[in-house]
Length: 590
Image (tube, rainbow, N blue to C red; front, side, top):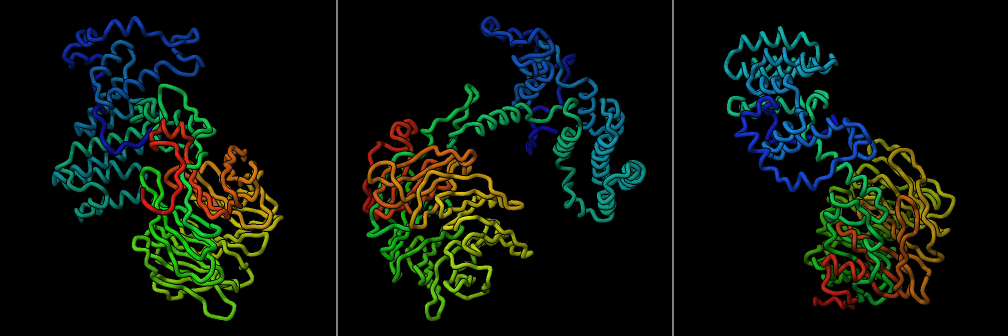
């Protein structure tokens, strides 16, 4: 009906019409409270020459505008103000017939309310039947509660059943006569102790059912304002904040300063190229892996600083990647054609080592199922093995549809398995039905990542393009991102920012002499909006903090991880940091 559902009863649902204002202490005295200062200084709304239309665009009907404001005043508990507005404007919130109908419902005058219902101006017979059903159902339950079983049966047979709607519900109502416990499942338990609340709830349901011109939906003004703010936010090209930055006082517009564009910290604990990094699901940790055969868990403090929590040692080969468990309590690390290790995030202890025995056989990728109780490992022989946390292999896939790749993803809802099936194609397999979708590219695919909502796939190609595909229905290429350079290495990109409105990627090129670049594109338009220089080697991987849109991390062949945040001026404005100094972090707490 256009309103926002409200589970709590408003402070004022049924109120006296303007002719009943004598119920207030004294309307004239209320009017006297109005300061002449406001009356003299206020400017009338433009009306385009018509008294019934207000606003510069000529689209707002004055009666609707005033009634919605009046409704908001009553809902906020400003009863006298609402009554004064009705009196001064001459525009009642509800007609006298509607006020009478509401009163009859709350008083439990069911027969009278049924008569009044047909007088309030509803022409749709289906709406009238549905409203009648709700009223008579309440009458039925109250009769049962008062042990008037015969009257309840008469209501069911002679009034509810002849409506010929919701027959299943009618059947359930009849069972309540025999089994009082059935009332609980239908939501009418303890009627006697909450009679006024149940009648108010009935009025809520009737309000949602009846046309809004007759009964204005609850919180309608709030809903309209929220719509307007959302439209402004969605139209804001650089919007990237989860804070309450939207204001009713001005139109909303962000600048590029909302993007993480300045290095706030450099992490230097790895001793060789950093190949991969990923923020934890709650954004409290960052895990990185390196060709120095180690992985590191970094803790992200509330002030935005990173400190080394655990150095994970045990792999005999470079560590290709890491994967966080859904609850962030455990971490998987995968060595290059070696083994997968399971670590406790809090203690740093290695809990289990997953390996595949055989000559020339090793693991090259790993990941979690959404339940956190199972994981998978990708083997060099194109097999995908599934394990429980105790190391038991519960299943495996092997066939021509698998490719020797390190990128395999299970969707966040657990329904789809996504993997490369050949150099230029990605297979999206629905696990339950075994239905397949095929994403075919013209160039070799080097890596891919999945959006948080499972609807989009970001694919890095060997021809220095990144493609975003919609995979919700039939796969469809949506946007191309260009501008970065990829010649020899696997470069990884990611979704990020507020509601994942941006795309970030590493690269092999530089825009400043001897400084490699992190690129940021606007997801919707495909426009390149930022190029972040700073690394002195290829930027292999980027990760955007899922809970802080102002924090981005990048991993490089220069052995470092850079943390990117808001510019110095904006950080000071936001009071996010005490200063804009770049911290050289050796893993020790400051």
